[in-house]
Image 1 (spheres, rainbow, N blue to C red):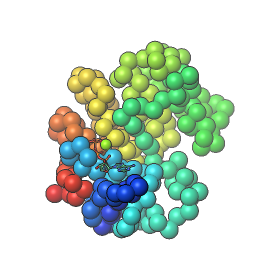
Image 2 (cartoon, helix red, strand yellow; image 1 turned 120 degrees about the horizontal axis):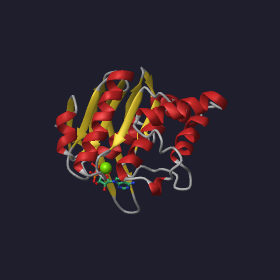
Image 3 (spheres, rainbow, N blue to C red; image 1 turned 60 degrees about the horizontal axis):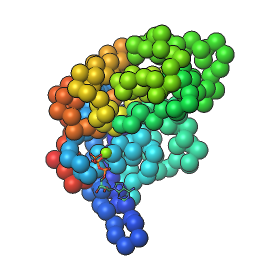
Image 4 (cartoon, rainbow, N blue to C red; image 1 turned 135 degrees about the vertical axis):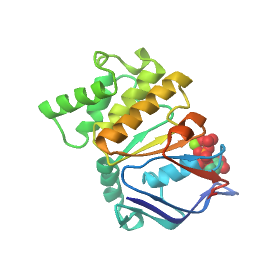
Length: 220
Ligand SMILES: Nc1ncnc2c1ncn2[C@@H]1O[C@H](COP(=O)(O)OP(=O)(O)OP(=O)(O)O)[C@@H](O)[C@H]1O
Ligand SMILES: [Mg+2]
């Protein structure tokens, strides 16, 4: 489903270049529940952003469903991100002035869904993550774990094939982190959604079905 082929990523600032990835190759099959682990600065977020087409490699290639990402235009990449990929960020990235319902329905409306379908799918996604009854609350009126659930519902409502989560438990206490991970494992089972995490949380490493270790921008 995803193939990362000899990918390097160099970040250039004024006078220096940081080699964040130094030739990473990795294959992710449909339906996997896997984690990319490694110390801070090892390149996890960089790799996740490349897989998620939020950024492009310096060299090497990424294939999504057999198609090379480098051959795609900006518009094609935006469409691919919207239709096939879901993101859950460490800091949730919810829109503070919107309710839980509106945060989720807004994401779905960008796919052109409206009316009754928009309402039904939004409510179903929120229910699925255990937030039935809290639809009207704004992020500031929810706990960290509940905010993370809204973020998962927002990703899930689009029914993505791949869900990428950058340190999904980093801002949660360990019990809540465990609940969120159990929820994602259940969604992996029921929907067959492919999950790729970046993490340094031992609990996530343990529950992932496969673990890839990054050190200094390379897989060991
Ligand atoms: N936009 C950027 N510009 C310059 N350097 C960057 C940029 N983003 C990341 N880096 C550098 O690239 C390397 C890898 O960063 P990355 O964020 O991928 O690490 P990480 O494994 O996600 O770390 P953490 O666990 O702290 O989130 C680091 O040395 C980092 O400083
Ligand atoms: Mg990171």
